[in-house]
Length: 354
Image 1 (cartoon, rainbow, N blue to C red):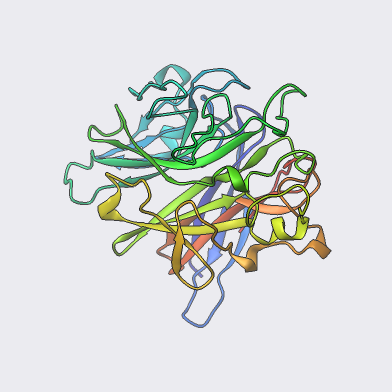
Image 2: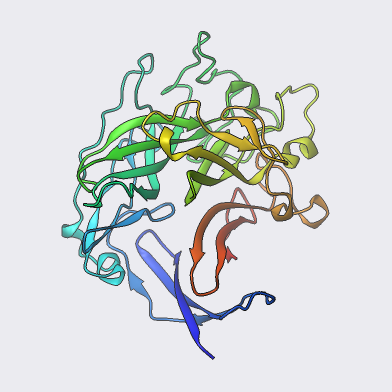
């Protein structure tokens, strides 16, 4: 029987990857796809990576965009978002360290100014089909901020209040981050980028604060996205980490928090990618009608029940799925999602789920 092989890269250390193959039997219309993992040789990735790998074919060049860029008061300013090329995917992933290049990125602005705040990671690239050259790219990025980089703005409701703020990963004096999802655009194949703005986020009322948030990761937010295009929409799959409603320390319920978390879905029209702010709609359990900064519903079939160790993302011991990577498999004729799984403590976990 014919087989198809899909490379999965699992991070072992900062630059060491374990590569494996999925070997899947071709599916007929009435069958469930089957797969097995086949070990492969270990290879070394020669740049910084901490997310899904954004990639695109630009002409006959396969281009990848690993790394992190921008301000981060906990981890320090980062200039690690780079790109590397290859004639094949394997060649790009095996690129030497000195062949990775820094694209021209938009600068961070002051906390009170409009523009790019915090650090960004490119996680998905959408290539505009109207551009025959293949050089018009939209990067879907994960963005992290803190009360120091994006203080609360009473006029817009955006930003965060540094009161009862949960601690971060490095030490008791560090702050937890808040993640958002935005779009950048390039018209030169990824050599330079223009920020188009945030198109999905959670606001201050949904942040989970002390004393309940002890995960040392996120105060809340949405992040770790993957995106695919179907017809005239870009569909976004992402991790949901905020409270399922307005957080109140006096009435906090861990089950309420858990009920709104896991992997969620939103969508935005392709016509809105150049001006995306406020245009996305979240899945509300029945349709895409929840606002971009409102309360949607996660994919309930992917939630780990509390009886099986599942729980709120603000707990350091909860199990839950996050970090989706979604693609259409033309051989199997179905969508395939890879997911990370937090198993504790504080989001640690070394497995990939399908």
